[in-house]
Image 1 (cartoon, rainbow, N blue to C red):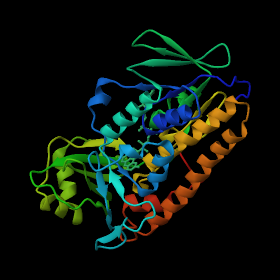
Image 2: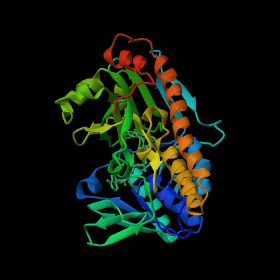
Image 3: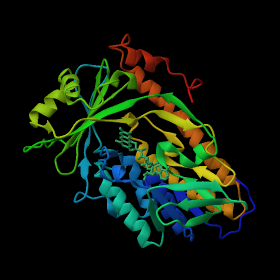
Amino acid sequence: MSSDFEANGRVVIIGGGPAGLAAGIALAQLGRRPIVISRIDQASRSRPKIGESLAPRAWPILQRLGIEHLIDDRRHLQSPGTLSSWGHAGLASEDFLFHANGLGWHLDRNRFETELREFAESIGIQAIESTKFRIERAESNGWNIGLESTGKTIFADILIDASGRSAAVAQYEGVRRKVYDRLAAWYAFLESPTPIEDARAMVEARPEGWWYSALLPGGRLVVALFCDPARLAGMNRSMEKWQDSLAETQWTRQRVADGRYQATEPPRVAAADSSILERIGGSNWVACGDAAACYDPLSSHGIATALASGMDAASAVHAALGGDLEPFERYVDRVSRSFSYYFSMRAEVYAQEKRWSDSPFWAARSRIDFEESTC
Ligand SMILES: Cc1cc2nc3c(=O)[nH]c(=O)nc-3n(C[C@H](O)[C@H](O)[C@H](O)COP(=O)(O)OP(=O)(O)OC[C@H]3O[C@@H](n4cnc5c(N)ncnc54)[C@H](O)[C@@H]3O)c2cc1C
């Protein structure tokens, strides 16, 4: 990042997910007026988000952003803990009850993002949605963003890349992503006239990967298999194959049967890789959230980390615009160190499951080396 910016330089954030909106809110709290631009097309508008869990550790981050009022049990569902069959055939329970930050939450993800965006707008942030736009380096020391929907061009001194896994700005800059584990999520939403009441998330290890299920606000159940992407070749949208795989589980199948759940539409596939950009930022740009680094959903880190890194990237940009580059260097270093710490913790958790060390899924996870990655 260059140090020759005026203190009133314009910051544009690419991506209006948790990271981008948190960056916007934090910049507004520092007295700036950032613009948040999101690429929203018809497909992404109607695509249901998986319905993620917000870990208890997110609470202090929500408080720092002043958005804790957006999380309550009228909107989202309290999660009292987790059930796991991992490393053993039984089902172990871990309560959040004694966690310093209280309970976790199963989010209505679309509602969370809509309300976060409304909050951002209420404190003066301009949030723009566009189906298509073009990012280019400006002749001066900044960027031009051309919005196809209006034909307008917006100038930015600094871009914050919060565009999720697509990392649009990093990609424009030719920065590659180091991918350490190519995990895929094969998931479906199930409905029932008699939903279960147990709001604990459930994780069940199986030879082919691990299953996750969680009750969502409104009584739906999201059920996902996390596995090697190659396993899904040719059957992504097959309800029958998905049901067959589910039938081989023990605890997840029982949970679905207890609630008399039925899938209403074919399963979907989402990338859930663990990956990090080769460079977290550069001249006049910095990445945050999934654009910077993606975590295995097993960690339930994604949203809390996206919010925290959005906030941290905002402080670093604010300081850089005032001529102080040290916070920027510290931020970049922190993202890399957090990822390598996460990766070592992740290896320990996967190593606890020894029952199927010969199966391709678990054998591959025991071989993953932090020094080796594919781009
Ligand atoms: C299957 C699965 C399950 C998960 N479960 C959990 C969980 O239980 N708990 C948890 O905490 N995390 C979970 N995560 C991770 C979590 O979803 C992400 O970490 C989090 O959404 C990251 O937020 P973000 O703002 O960085 O990116 P995103 O939420 O991906 O937001 C990116 C934004 O940028 C926009 N955008 C994309 N491309 C462009 C572009 N080219 N230009 C402009 N805008 C663009 C998108 O429209 C979107 O608004 C899960 C992830 C997966 C895949």
